Image (cartoon, rainbow, N blue to C red):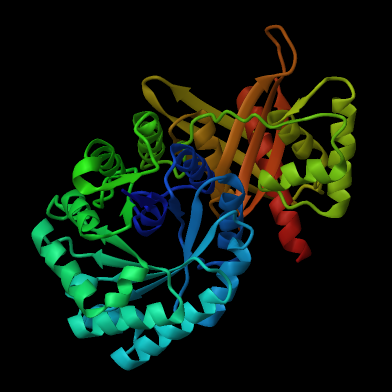
Length: 472
C-alpha cells in the first residue's frame, strides 16, 4: 500500500485571494497548526518584495518541524537564487517551478511562445536542482493545454531534475472519469513519469475536486494539493477522511490523521474568518497561542537573541546587549522568563529614540449604542496634526486616527494590556507590536487610562519606525 503525500495550499491560495488576506502572524500560526496535523507539505507564497517576503519564509521555516516547506519561483535564475536564500535553512525545503502551459495563459502570464517556454522550464528546473533534490514542476492549467506540448513540458522538467510533477485542472471542469483518462494519456505518452511522483491539483468549480483527486490516486498519483479552509479546491479534511476509511479500495493511505483534524481545521477557519470588519484594517484572526518558550538566567546572549529573532525583531548589536542586560535583571529574580515578559523587555530597552510624534490630546466617544470615535491631536516635531476617525471600538478608532495622521497603515502584530498597580486608580500598561517591511517594532505605554496607554504604546512603536527610516 502506497503512502500519498498531502500538500496544503491554504496559505498560498490565501495570498491570491483578496477575500482571504492573512497577516504575517496568522501565516506563522497556520504553519504550526498544519505541521502539528501531520500534512506532508506546506506551500507558501513566493517572493515579490524581497526583504519582506524573505523574512516571512525564514520565519515559517523556523516554525515547522516535520513538514516540507515548498515555495514557488519565477521562470528565471535570479528568482531561484533569492528564494533559496530565504528557504535554505528549512528542515525540508522544496523549490516549485510553476508554469502556465495552456496557449492563452502561457502568453498572458509569461509572455512566451512554446519553444521559449520549454527553454525557460529547463533552465529554471535545472537551477533549482543544483540547490536541492526536492524540485517540483507544476503544470498550471494543464487540462486546457495542447496535449503534445504538455507531454514535452513534462519530459523537459523530468530531464532537468524535477522529482515531482503536478498536473492542475485549474478550470475545474473535469469529471473523475475524464480526469482518469487524461492521466492515463499522460502516463502513456510520458512513461518516464512513473519514476517520479505525480501530483494533482483540482479546482472545485463543479464540486468534483475531491472525487477527481481520489480517482487520480487510484490511477497512480502520489501527491494531492488540498486546502484546510474552503477556497474552491480539494478539501483537506475530505481527502484525509477518504484515504483513512477506504485504504483497501484505493490501495493508498496518508500520514495525516483524523484525530486532530476537526479541531485544527476549525482553528484555521476561525483564523480566516474572524474579526475582519469593513471599517477596520486591523486583523484579529489569531487566537492567543500557547507559547511554551521560557528562558532562564543560565541562557547566554546568543540564546536570548535567537528567541528575539524568532519573534520577528531585527536588533542592532547595541540594542541586543541592552535587551540582554535588562533580561538578566529580571531572570536573576525569578526562575524563568516567559516570551511575554521578554516582549516587554524588548519594548522597554531596545531602540529608544527621540520622539518624532508626541501625543497632545485625545477625546474618545464610545458606547453600546453608538459607533466609537477618536479625536486625536498629535505633534509632529513642532506641527500640530489632528484626525477624527470611526472604529470598531475606542482603541481601534484611536489606532486608525494615528495611522491617518502618519499617512500609512501598519500590520498590527500584537496588542496586550495588563495592570501594573492595584486599586481603583491602577496604572495600566499597553504593549503594541506593529510590523513594517517584515520587521517588528514594539511600543510600551503606561497610564491610569488604558486607552491613553494604548495610544502612547502605538506612538512609541511608530517613532521607532520613523527614526530608522530617517537614518537610512
